[in-house]
Length: 65
Image (cartoon, rainbow, N blue to C red; front, side, top):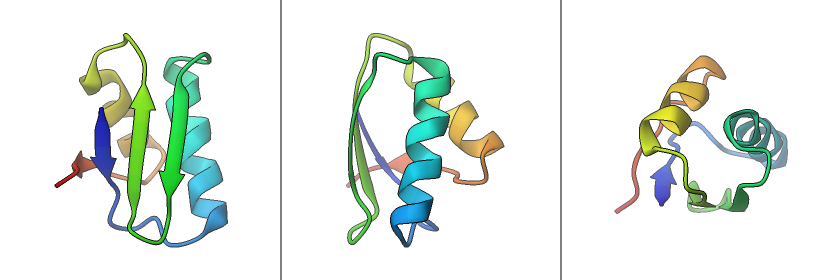
């Protein structure tokens, strides 16, 4: 699944986003491109779980275009 995170602008943000995602699924495969603010997540967990964790971490996500 892909997410677009508008306020992810640097490597520090990317680390925080990764931490939030892995708080839901520690085994999730996370690929992040902060330059285009895109996150790819490979996991069997529901998308809403990740959206909620990202929201709590201060990085609200939208579906990637």
